[in-house]
Each structure stands twice: as structure tokens, then as C-alpha cells.
Length: 595
Image (cartoon, rainbow, N blue to C red; front, side):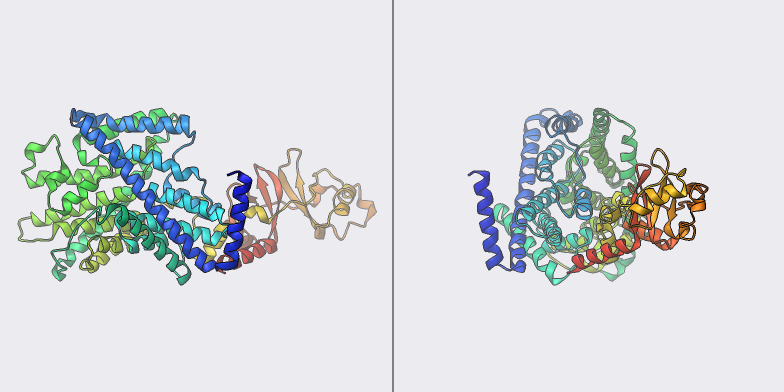
């Protein structure tokens, strides 16, 4: 079919839709489509990764176990070749990429971000990269939902909602937990939880989970039934675990940014790959559970089989001593963040959600084993603490306490742990949030002023485009202009009452207001005696085009009391923004955002 015929067919479909299907119904239909797509993407990522792992483990690793040391480097090298020579673009973090597109690109995500993770993430994880697949699944699903939005000509608000549907669908498909997926979309993407958004999110979650059941049956990542119920006398231990997961979350976040900052000093990507790959190989030699996502490790701990979870290590002869086991699990807790970040820094593709769960499960299990082996007659459920540790890390690292609560509740198909979950996650979230205001997903966006939040005023300011508020029809004058030149070259030709004064390099050095010369502008005896440099006022505050956003501009207007502020672009005068035009743009954006 020719492109012209495709366009004609699409036009007919859209025309029929406008006549016969209401906007609300059409959004629900699209949410089902997005959920189905997100489910397929999640399954595709899982199956490709599993295939790579099966081939490697059966044909290579079984022949020579030391290849654990080399395989991650091979995987990172393949990713490097793809990014440098095939796709010719860097791997970007999934969630920050989506959040940036929501705030600055009206939710438009380029199609390449839909299929790039489908190729690079399975290679990274399948070859042992210590990252997860959930982030790439959300990225691919979101890119596809953005493409659907463009194809069917929906507005920005609907496009954002459909991206939220994609994230909800991905989590629903991976964990078979529709409520956790819905809450994740609300917490991380700052969606409004109204009936308008709730139904599409639910439809997407249900559509995705049905897709997962259709292809996988009742197979789940974690299958666990809570056998030991909530005991009020264990509350102090839940508080201890909450504090522990809070500090672990702070460590996780600081280690993440610290290691990335360390690798930034290496300008060549191949150097980052070699150093990162070598570091991962060394860690895998001593701590094999750091290999890949680590889902088998979590399942081993949940079923009380810590030796299977830990796997073969150089310390196998000593694992009969429970304190050696505790030390190994502590090592996993410490080095999971290091291995994950080294994978990213070396050029790998993946997500941080599941590595966070792995680290949390190890920490929770460590805390329970320490309590049970202190010799004081104390006993807590190691499986329950493993689950609570996961929830505490998710709440602390991602600042998503509700997501963690519902995720664990749905994994266990029970609400027996609801009270311990609330205690642990709330403590972890409060401490980590007070120490680190923005999580791994949002830190860089917050620094740039591009972060969307649940605060509508803040969100509207973030969505505003300052470019639309800049006026450039002001006539610049030079400081050596006489009063006569000022009147003839600028005042007579302009309908503005402000005149920027610039030097020969177009740097702004001052401003002349019509009010400043009104009393002398008709005194011809002064035409050749007074020059602009004696009339102009210095500019103490200006708007920096490259750095300022709507929020900082609003504050500058508030602090100065000015009605017009000059805009500096690349160090040179560019134009003016007036307070009235900025407020008008704000009101329009607010109306469009809330309707």
C-alpha cells in the first residue's frame, strides 16, 4: 500500500472515530491497546533474555565456570558495537528519558527508544549485566504508546496518560500485580488519580496482565504464601528494618551517582567498558548472585534455601557457619548497587527496579538471620523480612512507598503483611526523602527545573515554554548614540517604550526607558549634548536563556518588581519577557492542563 493510500485510510478511520466514538471511550480503547502492547514487550524482553542465558549456561558456562568472569565484558562489548556503529546513539536511562519527554516534549518519545531497549537490554542482562528488565520494558511500551498517540492525533494530556498506562501495563505483566502498576504510574509520573485517569490505567493493567496469562499461564516471578502472620511483638524489629532500609537506600543512591561521576572522567567509552567490565567480572567471581537480574536469588531466599540463592563461591567450605552466610548476604547487599551502576557506566542497558528488590531482599534476610542467631531466643520469619526488605528499598530508593506496599501484597496474594509493610516503608521513605530530596529517576531533571510533580502550579510552570514569551521587537541602541540618534533611530521607529543598550558585540550593558527621556526629548538644544550612556540604567537582573525556567523567571519578577526583564542568549542580548505576557501564558497553560 502506497504512503498516500495509507494516509487516506487513516484519515477515513479518524473521521469515522470522531463521528461514532466519544473521546472518553476512545481513550479507554487506546489504553487497552497500550496495555496489550506493554504486555507483549515485557514478555519479549523476558524470553529473549532467557534464551541468551540458556545458551550461555548450557554451552559455555557449564564447560568452564571461570567464563563468568569474561561473559559480562563480551555482552557490554556487543552493546558498545551496536550503539557506536549500528544505532549511533548512546543508551539512555529509561524512566528519566520518559520524565523528560513528559515535561519538555509534550510526551513525544522517538520510536527508536521503543526498539533499542528490546535489543540492548536482553544482551546486557543475558550476558550477566547486573541490571533489570523492567525499565527497558517501560521505555519500550511508553515509546509505542507515544507513537499511537501521534498516529491518532490525541492531545498532550491523553498522551501523558497513555504513557502512564504503558508503565502500569509493564509492571502488571512482569509481576502480575495490576494495582502496583497503577500506583507506580501515579507515584513516579505524577499522574492525577481521578476517575478520568483511573479507568484507563485499570484497563491497561488488566489488558497487560491478561496478555501475560495468555502466553505464560499462571507462571509468576515470585510465588510465595505468607505462613507466619503479623505479630505485634515483632514491631521493634520492623522499625529496625525500616531504619536499615532507609540507610541502605541512601547508600544505594549515593553510590549510584558517585560511581557514574567516577566514570565520567574517562572520555572514551571503550575505557569505561573495560574498567566497568573488569570490575563486574571480579565481583561476579566472589559473589555469583550479582550475575544478571537476580530473580533466582530472591526466590531462593523466599523459600528458605540461602545456599542455592548464594550459589557456588570461593567460600563454599565455610557456608555451614551461619555467620559466613550472613557475611556473604551482606556482601550482596553492599555490592549489588556497585555492580548495577558499573554495568550502566560501562554502557549497558537496563533498569534499577529489580536490582533494588535484590538488594532489599538480601538486607531483609540478613536482618532476620542476625535476630534469629543472636542466641537470645528471638525468632522472626526470614521470608517475611526478605519481602519487607524489598519493600523498604523500593520505598527509599525510588520514593514509591505505595508501589512497594501493593507490589508485595500482590506477590503474596495476601494482605497479612500490610501493617509491617506500612511500618517499614514509611520509615524508609521518610528518612531517605529527608536526606535525599529527589530519587535516582528525578534528581537530574529536578536540577534542570524539568521535573513534573503533583503540585499543579509547579507542573504548569515546568511545562511552560519560555521561548513563546520572548519578544524581540525591541530596537537596540548603542551607548554613543546622541539623544537625536536615539529619537530618530529608535523611538520614532518603535512602538515599545524600552530600548536595550548594547555594545559592538551585542552584549547588553543597559536600558533606556521612554519615561526617562520624556522630559527632554523635545529640547532640541540637548540633541547633540546628551548621549545614551548618560541616560541608560544598568541592568542588575536578566533572564539567562540557557538556564532559567518559568519558575526562576517568576521569582525574578517577584524579587525585582520589574514589568520587563531582558533575555540573554549565549551571552548576548536576545529580547525581553514581560510579566503580563508570562502570566497570560501561565493562565493559558493552566486552563489547558486542567480541562
